[in-house]
Image (cartoon, rainbow, N blue to C red):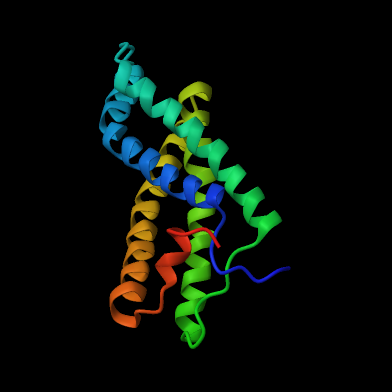
Length: 161
């Protein structure tokens, strides 16, 4: 596979689009949780914000699959030279975890809401919290590369290569 200096325009657009969708999902989470509890009490509390949460989740699922297909087909740029093997391994595992959660969270949410599967709803909540931790680790790693190592790693996600 050809060595790349950065991600493609589409990969970059999908990354930042996913960030935007995840922010919407995060801020619509409470409305969806309220709708879930209301549903279990026999009430209808499914409003616009809860519907937005569902559609954002569907979009995240579709875009995560597209991102994985692009990653498989185009590859990814190599990590900067001179990295620490343990930190490089943490980065790879963090990305793997994020991709698994970007598929698992919406899939479990859909199974819970449309399938009425309570265990899927519980899994959705657990995965949501795991995703928050991994996103925090991902951002911390990117900032570490940008401001401590100053190795240009973040340029890969800003300029196509």
